[in-house]
Image (cartoon, rainbow, N blue to C red; front, side):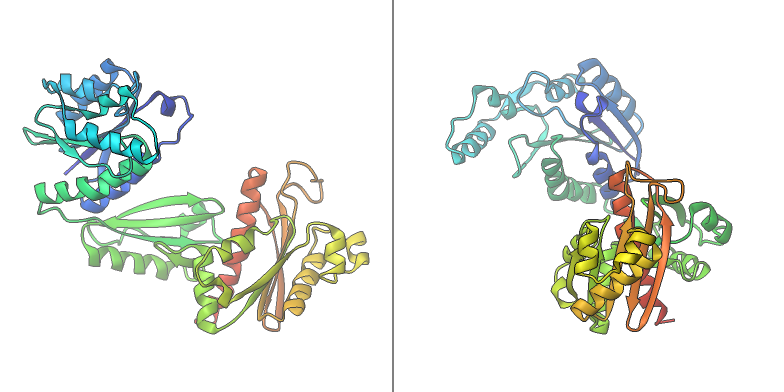
Length: 408
């Protein structure tokens, strides 16, 4: 079972809109056992859309188009697909009434141009869209299952989750959903992982993929046999002890929060270059107040000194971005808040401020775990935003690895 996605819209080709719809559909269709094997992005042009339909309709079991179902002059998908399948556009009064009711809720009258959204190709099924005015469409013909969705992500997702998944399950009851496991690693490069891992012995039918992320590498295994995929994942994990911090839907903040909660431990933070980003990530998790006591954003050296107790001599001699400073920062915030664990971060996120000795991307970290204190230095790359994000994740994942090490 193979699927194709035709993404329609000039704004995608111009780089003004990121095609998140494709990622969502690819994930959802793979989970159903009908993976996307082809995608094309086309202009809001009838000839381009028609050529894409001709190519996909003769090759794939499921074809989904996104975009072009709105009421404006450049929304030509419905008219194009109606012509391609040899159907007339039929006005459906109940759809127009629905559109009018949505505008009425806002206290305004529906523009006449929105009547276009009540036009449906003959013999097509209407897929109700509770998130907007453009319903989805479905047409089954000669083994082809064709779906049209609005390009607005929240509307497309609603139609897919509410209608398309159920239709596919009904049309293809023997489909086996795809099983996936993602292994999150840290502290080792993709090339180093490649040298360590032997994927040749993975169970038959289990596929393996490398997914480099910002500052880390994810490993994904997938296949139709749930047990085989699970066993394959366990085999990979056994090959890289010490480098795995989470699985599947885990995030660094979720994993650290869970570990701290299980141990009934607390944590405090002292941040400079990350500007409170570590605290933000941890506090995003429900129940974070059980373990996150608080943090100090000591961006200015005066705050490092007056609040956290960093020696003015250290700041003058070694600088704010130094091993000595983050050590004193982490001890200062741990003592200030009387926490079990603490993290400190100080670095140069750029784009200016670097030197030959301390280039942009230099970040020092301080960690305290009970009576143990240690420091680490990283040279991170990327934009200012990227360096700050990487630094926050490094801080959290390093503490995760320390907590996990107690279980070994």
